[in-house]
Amino acid sequence: MGSLSRSPIQQRGRPRSVVRPLYTPQERARRDASGWTLVQGILAPVQFVVFLVSLGLVLRYLSTGEGLAAATLSVVIKTMLLYLIMVTGCIWEKVVFGRYLFAPAFYWEDVFSMLVLALHTAYLVALFGGWLSPRGLMWLALAAYAAYLINATQFILKLRAARLGQAQAERDVSAGVVA
Image (cartoon, rainbow, N blue to C red):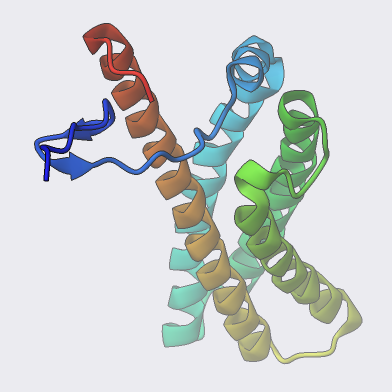
């Protein structure tokens, strides 16, 4: 049998998988041109810092019984920031992908975001409805925070993979590799 020729996307004898990039060139241009990208870039770390402070306050209350008012206020503030980042994120998604939610590039992150939103909203409903004890509320807040951490990790991993994929695509272009 004759020798097999290597595909241009093979490197060192191993085929590279061809994966759809997170952004098409048009979506990347819209993302880079949108002021909502900056808004998301500011709100995400602010929300994370508020989350860390609130987590500390919630854990302090659960372990010592002290600081209920501070813990409660911190969860409400964290939830308001979540609503803000969700609304602005929907606008960003509409600008970049043409739909407010569930764009294919962020479908599973958006699905899990709905769970995060539901848990935070359940906290507010239980708080203002008087449906749970203070300890019950704090445990519900911890459940919401666990979901938030998973969701934040989803987004970080997705964006990191996109950054690495973009860097690889740029190296391929400069090396003359065609997919």
